[in-house]
Image 1 (cartoon, rainbow, N blue to C red):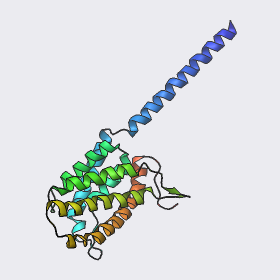
Image 2: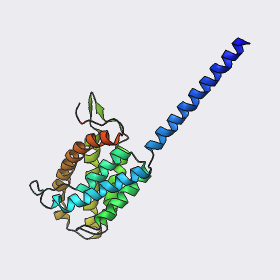
Image 3: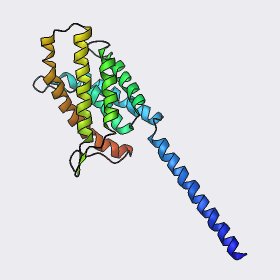
Length: 206
């Protein structure tokens, strides 16, 4: 009789642990999801990108090259939120809409930022660790910026009839902008990830 009681107690304890483990697993999955806090974070970062582009972006100039704070901020948001491709596409479209409020070529940003955001979301799923160095933040931001800038340049040629010879001048601009964005995103990602208690910060060089 005593043995049976012990077995029942052990079974109940094991069952309780299993329920607790499942609850913790569900909580973890919900935290990783695209919830209200994630939406607020994306909105805040895109708003910050717009403000920085209108203020700091107006006088920061490296040999004619300027950072694109809108691209940098949605790359940072995607790194922190880790959305799926569909959610990243929505982020890109919102970024394109924000660009319509700023000086520039209208409507083309919907295409370029859509492609840039989807590229970023796809790239952060690819392991990029070489030894102790994790290059995911830098490589993903660089490629996403090039995709966005390249798409913007191609759209100028296709839809606005830009001269093909003048488009060559955009190549160094896009590449330098991508390099600057890498520095911005890498510098902001580690402290923000710690403050927001997201997954372990990705270090460019460890």
